[in-house]
View 1 (cartoon, one colour):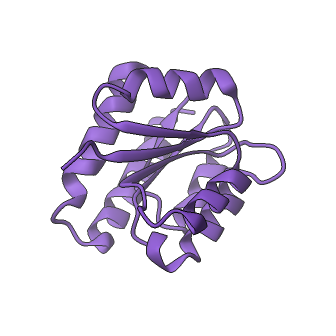
View 2 (tube, rainbow, N blue to C red):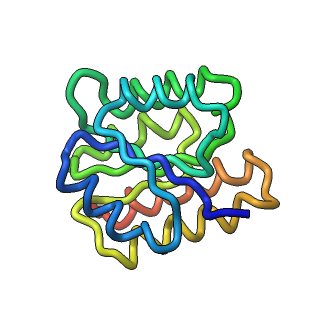
View 3 (cartoon, one colour):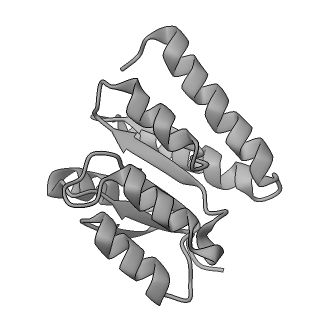
Amino acid sequence: MGKKQILAVDDNSISLATIEQELEGDYEVIPLNSGVRALQYLKKEPQKPDLILLDIQMAIKDGIETLKEIREIKECQDIPVIMLTSNADKQMVLQSSKYKIYDYVLKPFKKQELSGRVDAALKKISGEPLSQRVADGARSLLEMEQTGRN
């Protein structure tokens, strides 16, 4: 079996290049620079990614709108999604949680944080029901609220 596929969606080319650089040794990274392109890719490609990294703040179609549409694609309902945000507004992350996000990473991120969260998500999903993954994501969001980390 080949490397696990990660769909990375961010309209900032520097962030996208950083994600690719940080994860390319361990994973096959598919970089896309917009939510619209991500949706086109997911509808067209028969092979779905194992995980999606999705930036919240993007032009034209933001990450929350994109995530909502991803969840409407039957084959994509259970793909774990890690939201990326540099947004200090925690409400955006909390809003995305209703669309079953697995976790979030604040930008700028450290390599260890990004790869650690990706590794944890991919290891955990192999035998864990989606309801548990959603509960874990909600717990992570609560921790963010309690620690006040933006």
